[in-house]
Length: 369
Length: 186
Ligand code: HEM
Ligand code: HEM
Image 1 (cartoon, rainbow over the protein chains, first blue to last red):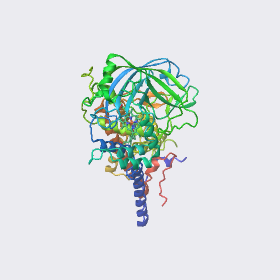
Image 2: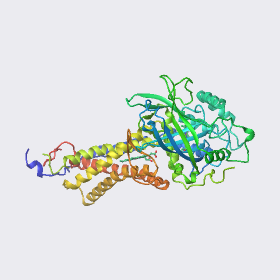
Image 3: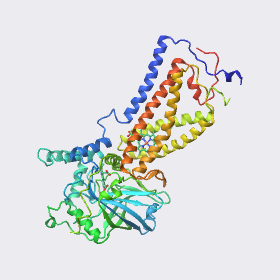
Image 4: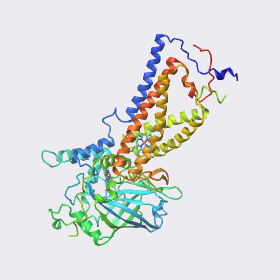
């Protein structure tokens, strides 16, 4: 190589461009910049205002429930809990997740009603939920939110978005408009079937004797790397008692929560973690469909809840129970609700963490009645 | 031929294009994921480890820049242009560190586990705190958009020099060795 190549440096090639050529080049540069900007805007969803996004879902919660700064946009009324999970080792063959090794892991969590209004009165018909965070010894976490219904009412985020509006109270009458609901059910036969199943299930007396179900399917991955479709449930050790409307006092707006708090204050509550193993062909992307009742069920350990705390005092208030925060050995399925939940919960979390906090309706101090 | 003084050092050029691709990918992945329900989880799972890779490469790149001589600015660049070019480069370096650190910090403040892949995760770098999370989450968005705008500025000036002034500015960063010529060809 010739040394004169080196020290010459870059020299301007300032020979004048012809006008036409200059225009073409300027246009080319503008097109590149505009093209990249346009692609970015499209990617960010700015050019497609009718596509459903996490922002639009959470906006709809606020639209139908009103704004309640600082609170979860759904499951807004709740109380925080802690305790531990004692694995019996039966899960080791199903999943390599360290949570299934025999032994104890600490738990924090939250019981809630699936309502958007944090000060709504407790009702037997409101869906009850249990959200848990398992703190594994290697620093991993398993977060799960479960409901006391047998199947979920919708199979997609779009379905949820429409159902929210169809079941919202009409400002004129204060009641949902039945024609909107029947329109919704006609468009979503899977929801019509699921809602029938939900209505047919018997509701228990309170939080303590309810079963809580993952509803969405997940995958368990074992030490060899093979995957099994699963769903899981927390099944109570407390004996089931049907909800007794005669015993409920309309004046007590927190009756379900107060009973739960009194229960935990008097003795620890326990649930068995039951894993249901799906068979090939069982629907994993359809949370509205139950699995056949004869599927293998494995009891992998016991959950003990021995502390209850108001949201105002517990770190669980500021936790996003994102269903896809999973330890190695548990993974999401092809159920589209999972990623949609992850996205919507993140948006709800981001909004509420930036707002000033208001006291929870449920306090642990004034109970023991 | 490896130390042609009119080009950046080979390692600098490799890091430049690798990180350009990664940062641009991160901007698009980030923008797409927060607007997506169906792909949110898949994209976030790529976004976190890729962002941390960028943080590591940014450190390598900064050290590399401190220990190599930069090619001189071409004579076609005015004093003001040189100042703007240096300033935007400094801003780009700052953002290469700030964005992943803010991402990591906001997940720490949001009480999230910072999952990389499989069981591998990073420790929190900040205490869990709602207000801190909210501020950092906003900062992450603002810094990302600032990165995008700075990148557009950087790209348009390089294109302007290369296509209009035709001083072969792009050659300074070309991955292959480019011989500088005394005579222009046009
Ligand atoms: C696309 C459908 C769904 C949407 C849009 C949705 C929306 C939400 C939102 C916005 C929150 C509040 C999150 C927060 O701020 O932390 C929430 C909480 C919750 N969701 Fe869903 N959800 C959906 C499906 C489901 C399903 C299928 C289950 C199944 C069990 C479920 C169970 C829960 C539970 C247990 C909580 C409460 C967690 C807690 O106490 O913090 N959700 N949901
Ligand atoms: C290296 C450069 C990075 C770039 C260019 C980048 C870019 C972005 C962008 C453009 C968004 C969307 C912001 C919005 O529109 O609101 C975003 C969101 C996000 N980024 Fe990054 N990011 C980087 C690094 C990281 C790192 C290292 C982490 C975590 C370890 C991270 C975690 C997140 C999370 C969790 C979200 C938003 C999730 C949500 O709120 O739903 N980012 N990022």
